Amino acid sequence: MKKPVTTDLLAAGSVPESDLTYVVMAASFRNKWIFVRHRERTSWEMPAGHIEPGESADQAAVRELYEEAGVVSSSMTHVCDYSVTSGGKTEFGRLYRASVGELEEVPEYEIAEILLSDELPRQLTYPEVQTVLFNHAIS
Image (cartoon, rainbow, N blue to C red):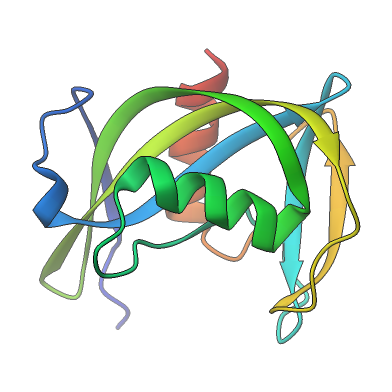
């Protein structure tokens, strides 16, 4: 039996940077939300990724938006921190809301395509996490 995944929203800045693993961005461009599809998947997700060694969460958010969606200009707001518990392991991340000013072609990394949508797509890669984060970011 698959263990449940739980996502808990935490106060902005409540998790020390050293404990953060991920950044996730609810990014809008021309009144549409940006979602990305990884080359190895058929499902959609919000732009997100790992924080690299020596990188701040803010720096990771800017880098991931560029790598995953071709975002070259945006303004970001730290919405909250969050935890995800799966299989007895808990990891922490930081959620941002980004207002995108300019997009370029998506760089040749792991993303196959982007989707601009009015709402959260049905077919999500991480529905237990992304639904909670998206709904909180847009509220």
